[in-house]
Length: 465
Ligand SMILES: [Ca+2]
Ligand SMILES: [Ca+2]
Ligand SMILES: [Ca+2]
Ligand SMILES: [Ca+2]
Image (cartoon, rainbow, N blue to C red; front, side, top):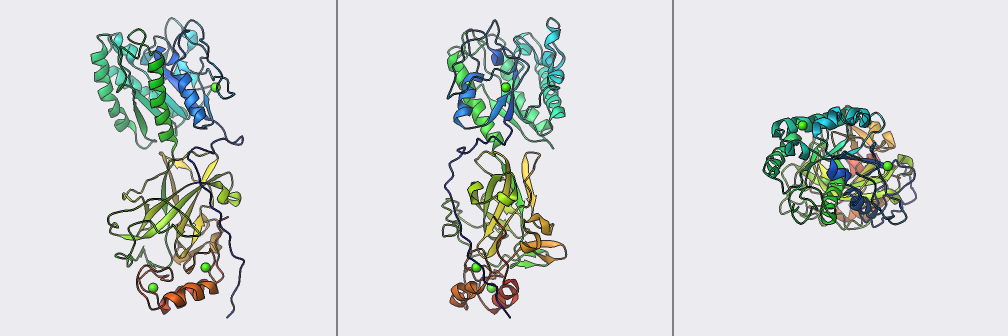
């Protein structure tokens, strides 16, 4: 027998501030469509919510582009001061006085302004901010017809881009008598999200009504003044960031505890209540903790997002977010609240690759960027050798066509070699508990860990850049 000795991996970790790195000339800006009526357009003495929103998104370092066939306010443009070296982006699709049906089919007195499906031929929104329906109600149309038209607006937008993020407003109030009916409409707007949300991405309901005072936050009982514009901009900004934050659904298997079809949960009872990835090489300081470990849990894992264009260059300088999660016996990674949907509070610049770390298995990174479908970035490492970057060097066939992370890295330095024998296995052998040399994860360290896993895997090392 011979042992392959390898140079130690060096791990770098960097502190990431949310939103701090969202600017890269390689990436396409996120296209945002402000869609609505006079409340979106504003007139020559008002800047529209679009202006304070634009400033907020610049502050967030979001790389974005307002789109829309319109570049003017009603009766001419106000002064939009430059901000941080940027000139205000005037594009919008706010049409003074228009109802939802006119957004869909056009306005008879201005046929040249066209309508939504025509506008969509010249641009593709990735995010739509929809504040629409006030004129329908003010002009005496019904809640029911307006709800139906809002649905058609969403369907039309999705026909253009199935992955569009729909941010649908509950409308700001008015001092007009129609306000009662606007409240009725607002009450039914969340139902739109439920009715037509699947299988498309979720529709984000943005409550522009709560906290908006029709007397103090408008200049005429209908249209926002500067205070009202600021309030609307803040609501839109928060919703945009929420909608852009990635949600992951990831599946992996661990070779050690894998047993024909599922993983053993023999560590149940010794798995710590707080995430165990504080020490090097992870140096992860997250506060994830639970009052009890959910049934069916195999172990803690650490999920990491790397944002770049190509896996080969997805090194630690590309890390944008990390989160400690639980791995269940079927390979599903779960948030500590039990959900398979892992929410990250970060923005993506190029593409995301996901890394999965576990204490005594070699980490894996997705071989391709994750793709968002129905609002979620899903990735399954288990159903193909090539799902992990490095292929057969990164994952093992652990049971006819099922692939798992490689066991035996007791000192978690990214390689399986003699150090794992001398530095950890020999020290821990004969002991029980939550121990890194317990490669088969049956809660004790013994010869089976060494002879059935470690020896077989000598020479494997991490394929994560
Ligand atoms: Ca633009
Ligand atoms: Ca209508
Ligand atoms: Ca090692
Ligand atoms: Ca063991």
